[in-house]
Amino acid sequence: MLFGLFILLACQLAGEIIARSLGLPIPGPVIGIVLLFALLALQGWRQGAASAETGPVAKSADGLLANLGLVFIPAGVGISQNYQLVFDNGLALVAALVISTVLTLIVTVAIFRFVSRLLPGKEAQP
Image (tube, rainbow, N blue to C red; front, side, top):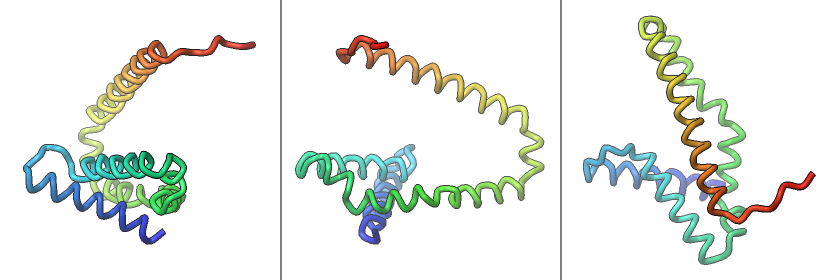
């Protein structure tokens, strides 16, 4: 599990280095997760898909997902410390949440419909 955690952190660090050294407007963790995806895809391609599902990164990811709630504690504390800022911009925050949720649903449905047309489907069975 420790080696898998090292791989996760190394990909994030590499993403930060790439983002800062090239001056990209993309956050380092986003680049890092793309690097991790590329590494896992390459590993799955070379050794078979099952190896990526049971490897050290999968074990570390399972451990992190089991404790995902702990990740939100600092965000909640930060919001509670800046409650006046939240109250002052509450309407804008609610509008941003509603609009982004609706846009996400629309894009998800559009992508699902597009992909379902590309893939040969089975007839619905009762």
